[in-house]
Amino acid sequence: MVTGAISGAARRLAVSAPGVSRLVKHAEKSLGVRFLQRKSGRFFPTPEAENIFERINAVYKKVDDLNFILSRIGRGDLWELRIGSVPSISQSMTPRAIELVRRRYPEPRVDINILKIEEAIEYLLLGKGECVAMSCPRTSNISSSACATK
Image (cartoon, rainbow, N blue to C red; front, side, top):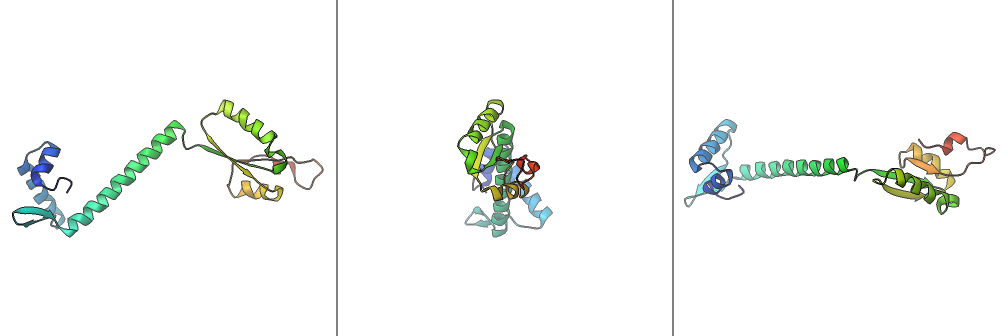
């Protein structure tokens, strides 16, 4: 399919053209599907062969995508730290905390989201982020555990 000819396939696979022809005939017989049709002395793929070829290419693309993602994970490229911060400390304490984290773990991308204090617990519970930076007075109605990371 890629080379457009049995001889081209044979050259690409570094085998003989009769070997490729035998393999195609064997595959057609085994599967009960014709892959090639002859027109004007040349072979052309059947619609069934083109359909199969498209599906095989889709599988190869997914395998390539998976290999790409796995290599990025291996390098730590996909690690992302999502931090929520209330506005009152987002310009002072949160950047300093992120700087300390980056000294120890320089690889992850950091995504900072500014949240209303009412959104902080939901941010963690719904898995929107890994931690929330906020101040919590001990006397408030918000428990100190809400100020901790998940």
